[in-house]
Length: 381
Ligand code: V47
Ligand code: SF4
Image (cartoon, rainbow, N blue to C red; front, side):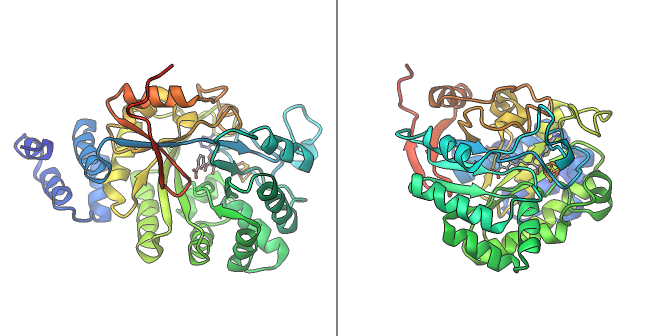
């Protein structure tokens, strides 16, 4: 008897049983069923369904990669209310604003000479003086220094601004960056697509439609991408489901998304600090619902610098099969928003140990989920 069979024999309500049967038969949930889960399903029930999907797809495999970030600047023309990290151009002289020079960026790449890092993740504020030409040149140089590294770069927010300033279409912009050596897009900037919520939390940056159009354009030129959602603030279940439903529809069309990454709103040092952060139970519930609802996404990622390493570990039983990378203390987005991980760095051994400690199988992947090395038998030093 499977865990879902046991659920079906318990005294949960008929609607939850009908949803469990659908999951068992690998049928897609409707938006209404998704909302029903938010309103009525307990964390234990959600865990059973999400874990069965996770194990059906990936068994015990849990992916991680060896990566680092470069955040060229935190100067930003936008003013997202949840952002703890950005500073306006007029604040560029303040102690916590930064603008890396090209040389500093190349030095940051060279610092990994001889190390078996496979990915650099480049995102930052939307600086009014850094445009498409600047970034094209930057990527070409990075690839010249380190041809083997995968460049995952620029959120749709940065790309919308770049394309608009350069007066080129999204496709053209992305083709130029791809020719320069960019391999994929990260999932940031999605937040919540619903226009009314967006108006309240990040009204001046790209719209939900624009975010989706940019990812569709990326997929059309052969660049895969990730998708995110910012949960746990003023949104309601209907907005979360609407967001995931739009991603699911685009994935049906293009198949270009690799991973879905729920990002928990962290309330430190931003204009939404009066909103309390949601509990770990809500984290487990949301990740599980996303695993159940997004039937055409292969990977659900818990980004540990944002959620914390212990919650990331727990999430491996709630639908998650990927915990991102070693990171090497190279990102400030979450530490500045008050996350526990003030210096996010994990060695490969720590990553492997974290995954093994909850009975899963650590597998190093590259940026597009080719398996590079199975660490399950590795002796830890
Ligand atoms: O778009 C900013 C989020 C995102 C806060 O694709 C916040 O592999 C919570 O998208 N609380 C950028 N979230 C980071 C991102 C990302 C990270 C790791 C991996 C990948 C990937 C993508 O960070 C922003 C925004 O949604 N964010 N401030 C905050 N206070
Ligand atoms: Fe700028 Fe991104 Fe922060 Fe918004 S979330 S203010 S776009 S850096």
